[in-house]
Length: 294
Image: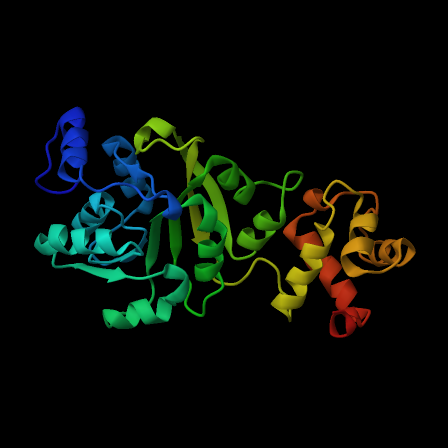
């Protein structure tokens, strides 16, 4: 809870809504404003912040979470794409000298650019309530950057959160793409009534602890992910058929590739672990395929 806010939860939530009642959510930007202070406090606790921490908040919105972050962290870079909300943030956060509002599209702002604005360097923490339609893109934006965060506390659609943290047997291309860079877990779920306006689906708050090195040792990350994407080209098919389709090779060659990697050709892509994807990639690479496959 931000300093100076009412202690009563219902009063606090009502105050937060009343203070910004004239700001209407923009459907085009997928805006759903968090109004439940209990959820806000759980997000803040999950971030495990100290006065030494630098936070990049994506989608600062009305600034309710921003103020709470400012009370716990040393510095907050609050990114918001909506120009009207940016103006509101600048007015509302004048009492928070450790907040740097930035008006812009996060996908057009590299972490390097943002850190340079406040003359800071890693480590940093990302906290975000992401519009569902850009969640995957924002995660990739940070995880694949030259200076990734130490951890990310992100609210996404519940099904997306479950997919990101899924174990072998229920993995997806998104699971592999995120877990390659970070350990992922779902912390808790958030009902629609916690937002204004309420979304049509549940949300999930996930925590990503970024690995010092990727989970799989590969010499060409782009080629590795091309292979993984090929494996998920037809996720309901057996892997030999999915790879044949995704790599544009015949099923016999796909089966031979899988046999060489000691992977049962009848399995499906969602059952493979990160280590198995790594083994399959190295087998594919040693066959000379990455350099010649378009």
